[in-house]
Amino acid sequence: MIKLEVDLGERSYPIFIGSGLLGQAGLVRPHVHGKRALIVTNEVVAPLYLAQLKGALGDVQCDHLVLPDGEHTKTLATLGTIYDKLLADRHERSTTLIALGGGVVGDITGFAAATYQRGVNFIQVPTTLLSQVDSSVGGKTGVNHPLGKNMIGAFYQPQCVVADTDVLASLPDRELKAGIAEVIKYGLIDNLPFFAWLESNIDGLLVGDKTLLAEAVKVSCEEKARIVAADEKEGGVRALLNLGHTFGHAIETAMGYGTWLHGEAVGAGMVMATDLSARLGWLDMDAAARAKALLQRAGLPVAPPSGMSADDFMRLMAFDKKVQGGKIRFILLRGLGKAVIESGVDATLLQQTLEAGDNLCQR
Image (cartoon, rainbow, N blue to C red; front, side, top):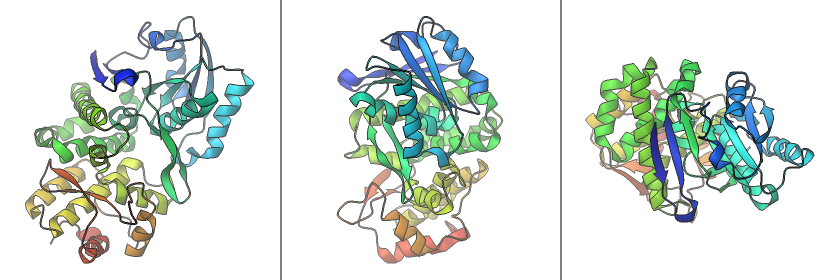
C-alpha cells in the first residue's frame, strides 16, 4: 500500500493506494469519528462492493443509499434524495458520509456532506480510474446545472481517500479510457517524464495491467496533491489542472450530460488546447501532434462533436468557472509539460481552432 498526504494544515488527509484495500478492517474505520455513517453509491457499484465496504466498517451503524448511475443524475434533485435519507434516518452532525463510486457519486456526496447541518465528515472511496486519479482528491464537490457543468458546489475536503486498484478490473473499457485522459493531463501540464512513460506504457494500461495502473494512480495523485496543497481553492496554479476542461465542459453541456463521458470530452478538449497553443506559436507542431497521438492511442476522441459550431462553444464557454472580468481563461501549453493560464487569446486564432474539427493539429 502507498500512502500519500494532501498537506492542507488542519484539513490535511491521507490518500491510500493499493490492491485489496476496500475490505481492510482498520483502514477506513479510523476516519469515521462517530458511530454512524451513510454510504452513498449507485446501482452499478453497489452489487459489487457495498457489502465488502460495510464489512470493513466494523461497529459503525451503516446505512446506505443507492442512486441511479450516470452523469445526468448529478443534479440538485438527486442531492435532495441524499438529504431525505439523512433526515429520515435521523443522522446527526457526528455522522460520516462515504462516497463509494465514480466522480458523480463522489462530487454529489461531498456536496451533501459540505451542506448537511452545515457540514459533516465524508470519505472518498473512488471506484473508477478517473475518480481515483482526479475527482476524489482536492475537495471539489458539486452538481451540474443545465447551463454549465459543476456550477453549483463547494470546496470541501474529505477525511481520507481509499483508492483500491483492484476495483479497476470491473471497469468497462470506455470508462478506463476516460480515466486515462486525466492521467495524460498530468504529463501534459508539468511532468514531461511521466508523459514519456505513458507513451511507452499506454498499451499495458489499456489492457488493465495492475502494476502500470497502480503507478499511474500514484503519480497522478502525487501531482494533484502537490498542486492542491499549493492552491486549495483555485486562486492560481490549481487552474492548470483544468487543461482541456474549458472546451470539454462545453462539449458535455452541449451534447447532454453523460452522452460524452467526462474524460472523452477532456481528451478532445486537450487536443483543442494544444491546437490553439500551436496557433499562438507557443507549441511546435511536432509536440502538438505528439500529444494528439497519445490521446488517440488511448482510444479517446481527438476532435469535437461534428454538430458543435464555434458559436456553440463560445456561448457555453462563457459560463465557465474560470471566466474573469468577462474573459475566458484558457489553460494552454508553452511546451509539453509547461501549462500556463492565458486570458488574452487572439480571437481570430481561437475561432480557427473552434472551426478546425477533424483537422486539429494537422496544419
